[in-house]
Length: 345
Image 1: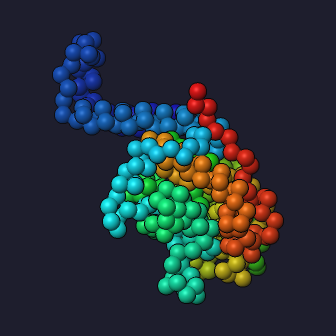
Image 2: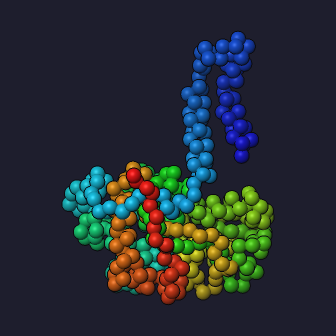
Image 3: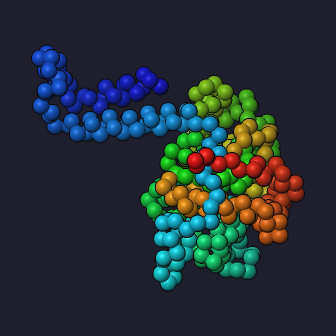
């Protein structure tokens, strides 16, 4: 890793090599007159420094699901700005999926004009009801997996509720709520496949993942560390996770690695595929928001506390309605533990 960074640094200085030689000869490097290209070099140095800091922060991170703020029902600047939207624009703008069966998808048989439905969608309506007093006061924006963080940072959405795993890399870019679902990475493959799970049976196999997904970063790290066979091909990535199922069906991939909760839903859509082996990680979904939207993070955390307590119309009811058919009636393994928050004193 350090060698690669050094080589990248040396390549960036290529355009000013002559200046560096002259400066070294006169031993007054600090007094040398910058030549054209210095700004680009400085920009590369700044970008590299930022990457190094981000990598260091991710390496030092522990328990990212606990790096969230304590609950509060107070309105701050972020929430007030949402409430101040006028007319038809007075809605909560939320990035979601529209292709994840039973999570966020359009059901043509619902009789509701193919409206978005699913476990994540239920949570969005609950958040809108709490903040704006109307569960339907939502503008849904379907975004691909690899656009979740950019959509938040660019202000295209107020939040993302899209089976988004809380991890150390992402908490450098966005703020997360407390976890609202527990899952883990798992292998999905055709029933006839010799693949048995996340093990040596993946040698020589083509694995599909979504670009920017936790699954891909896990595979990449494990292959580098020798925990995944060297011959496993992880180069097949797609913008949306559901596209991997299509690739599997077309024979363009041998297996899919994704969250077990999503994999189970895909197996329910296609009876020719199945989950192979147990989950090999433990992960948590969270609602993602802008880094500086503290009041919104706190409000969502308060909503989650109330949502989990509401046995009639809350988390348990939504699980029973959408996920029990694919994950089983026992929701205990999917319900996250009692949340822990950052100390604010």
